Image (cartoon, rainbow, N blue to C red; front, side):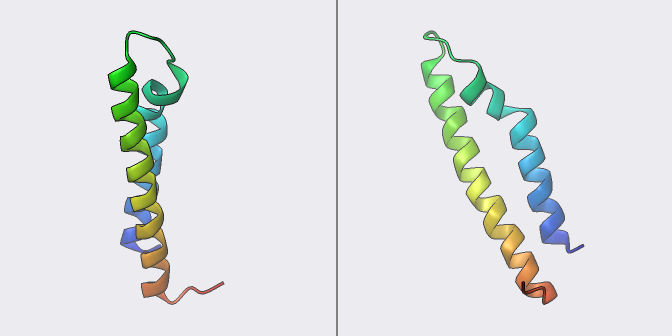
Length: 64
């Protein structure tokens, strides 16, 4: 597996384990700013991970 694919998978795993819980699962009124920042981090990092994964697939010559 390509190095960029592994980094992308590691980013997704990190997002699921750490900020995703505070962004979507822990819904409370007191932590609205933390929720907004966590949600922004999750969305931007997921988009970056998808881009990185696809770029790694293009470099390794895998086209499906």
